[in-house]
Structures are given as structure tokens and as C-alpha cells.
Length: 196
Image (cartoon, rainbow, N blue to C red):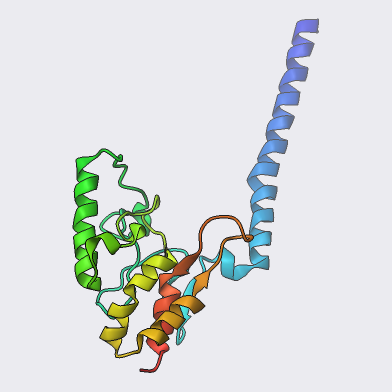
């Protein structure tokens, strides 16, 4: 057998062996390891579904609509027809887009009218969708600005509703990453069980 053919066969065998090892490692071992780690914290690995009386009502990770003035409202959604997890994505409108500016002004007017505030007092995150269009959180400022409307609609005192907002405000991750947030689903569920 010639030296060239021997080298070719040796390289082919090495390449095939590497392919098999990589396939087994990346196609079997790694996915199984990730799955096993996920089983250690199943609530986090299964989408953090929230159930009430055994029935799923939403996920802590995905925003959803809450029609009516008696609920805290999430950020606007650019996902499909709104909060569609199969169509996650941003509007991709740039800061100079007239469509974006028009949408922001329409949202500003609608939120100001709903909350009974001046348009300049609308929280910035009530005007723009998140990058995924599915953000389940609002800023504490946004939640606080909705307190009067929600309290009036539910017949609760503003102090009680503001206390719920404070209870459901989460600080920065690790104390310095990101901004404080309020999970709208969790807040609305607490609101639902709050006595007038």
C-alpha cells in the first residue's frame, strides 16, 4: 500500500472517529446533561407556569393581556397580534421611524386617558414593547402610576394596592444587574385575592 493511501485512510479514520465522538458528545451526552440539570429545578425548567386551583393561568416568563381597568396592564406587545409566544419579536422600528413615533403617541394618549394622568406622566415602559414583545414585567414606576385606576376599579384603597405593588417589586439581580421590576401576572393574582 502506498504511503499516500495509508495517510488518506489514517486521516479518514481519524475524521470518522472525531465525527462519532462529537456526535455522541454533542448529540447525546450534552442534551442529557442539560435535561438532568433542568430536572434539579423543575419549576424553572418547565416555563414557570402559574396555576390557580390546579388550572394554569399563565407563565411568570411570558407577558399576557389583562383586559379591563381593574387589572395592572403590562408593556405593549409587538409579538404577533399581541403576546403571541409563537411570534416573539420586536417591531424592528428605529428611533426615527414615523410609525414608531405614531404608535408611542397613541399609546401615551391611551394610557394617560385610562390612568387619568397627564400624557407627560406616562411611564416610558408603558409606551414601548420589549425586544421579545413578551416581557412579563413592568417598572415599579409604571405599576405605581396604575395604582389609582386599579384601586378605584376594584374598590380598594390606594394604600392597599400600592402595598401590593411594593410587595411584588423585585430588586436588581445580584443587587446591581438590571432594573427593579414588577411581574404583572403575579401582581394581578395577588390583586385578585385582595379583599376590598
